[in-house]
Length: 371
Ligand SMILES: [Zn+2]
Ligand SMILES: [Zn+2]
Image: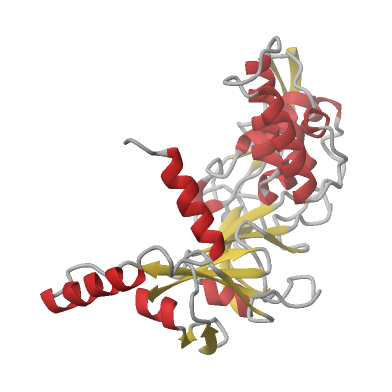
């Protein structure tokens, strides 16, 4: 059961933009949607395209897919281990038998770490400098990382013969794979410790918290990651450390919504304001801004406040704020208000509607004649 490459499924290149991916998916969805398509296997093809789109349209999932293929994509967002950290080395080993081919004593890069951080809507717009604490395992100072009580006896591990590695056979979807794994009895040290160090309980490692300064750039979007080089787990056998990835989740705002660098906002206005026109003060993340609503503004009219959006995270300009006007139909009117509206209705009839709406109105009446 080989799975097709997601980029191949959508027919886009590896460096396709979000828009290209969206367009390619829409095209396929129209072609294969089970409700409309008469093509063979339309159902499967639709599902395949949907799965590819769900991964490639999500920045984080796409990065994981690019780095780890289908195995990484399936990890998804909720798949991380305790404390929001996760690594893929086990899956990687399982599918590619990486451990079997590797020289266990060769220097290896430490594992990457992932940290999830939640920030406010405004913090995502303006950026934020903050400090995070991440747990890190460091060599125990009492025993220098050996796990043995200072001065006690240490002998060769009888399970692995001192190599620190054992062969483990595993059944995988790709057949039987022999993996070389770290010996559980000596944790890869190749030594048997007769008396354990009391500080670390024989692990040779103690957990410490390390403070790391994180600079979140203004304009960051929900789901984007910040890479902090060399702050992942320590390397093995003198290899370089891994990297730390900070996944940024942006909290929803009560009134504003992000669309890339632009901010969307819906503003309710009264029937009277829409009809007679008004000057409003509308909220933006940069403070209140005056907005002139002309007389005769329809519900759904869209205004643009240039430069009132988010800065581009890569430094390419500044987004706008888009305002969608929603005309509120008055409710719970007093008798006097009703009376005035009835009078207004009699005065206006159908003549007051402008030409475009008159046409729509007459067409509408024609279509539903006799109902
Ligand atoms: Zn051993
Ligand atoms: Zn110790």
